Image (tube, rainbow, N blue to C red):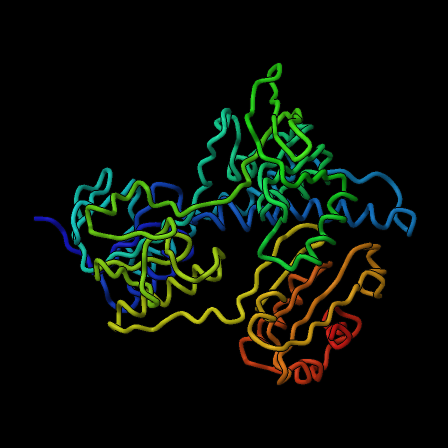
Length: 448
């Protein structure tokens, strides 16, 4: 007789783990399954290992900025040693994650899962499992590239596990992955090129600050080529030759490594969703505003696998996982509130945003926009940083609608504005906040 569970979760990343624990602690029979090591993209193949490697790049860049200002001598990255530093975090994650799930009462399974009916799935090595509810939290994967030679590219997961760093690297795409990895690789001594088919890079961020980031990237030795459409990647004596087309004609660049940074899509192709009557849209699982499948009420989806309004960010995945779990447990229709969710590109320095872009805010109402070049301020002067800026957008009633920042430690400072937007605070209320001095937060009052 086939076993029936209250909940089966597909995907042991942040969305799936948070939901599985919540339901198990409420007394449900819960299992979670993943064909990859437990931990998901963020902990194992994305955010966290990336930032471990960035620590080395930050240290090198900090020393170089202060050369002649009290710091002498050559500072360089030992790539294999830096990789071991990263592994000191990532290696224990799967066992720790699985142990935490078991402690919460979740049954942990390993293998590929696929639906075979509206209330049933098959899992490699475990047979068939029936369920009252299922949560799809399988995350995302690099999107397919169609040009000849695309199979020669490596993805972000492979980059984060490079035993040695090649001398010449081309990143394809103008988003988070390309810019973050490019800034690490350039500080480690690689010759780096970013090829982006679009006219504007990092489209989700303020264009004025993106321009600052582009200037800073070029100052770090990164070549950024916009409106460069790749035609093919071919062999060049054991290396690669990337052929691309621009408005000026066809050109090429040689590289020892070509990295896919041209976007990600929901990782749901292998699930056989049609067998369970699960609809999709925009590449992800179609969901109601409360994260339930409209075509199969047993099914919920959260995180990058869901076609929800939430951005593909780890905090969104965790938040949606908990909301989905609560809705299943209580048979409610609570909708996630994405207000005040910040986002950061961890270049050096970092680019951060929360709330509306200037163009979005102007479409809605009359607004006040304060754009400040902060590169000459004390906070940057002490670090030798040459590029920094902030743009704060407020409504007629003084409420903060958006905050956009580029500079050292602004990934932390953006959280102040995240809280302000979440709570509906005005500019005057934020300026009234007493801050320790001298800190980044003490600069806030002068930004708008």
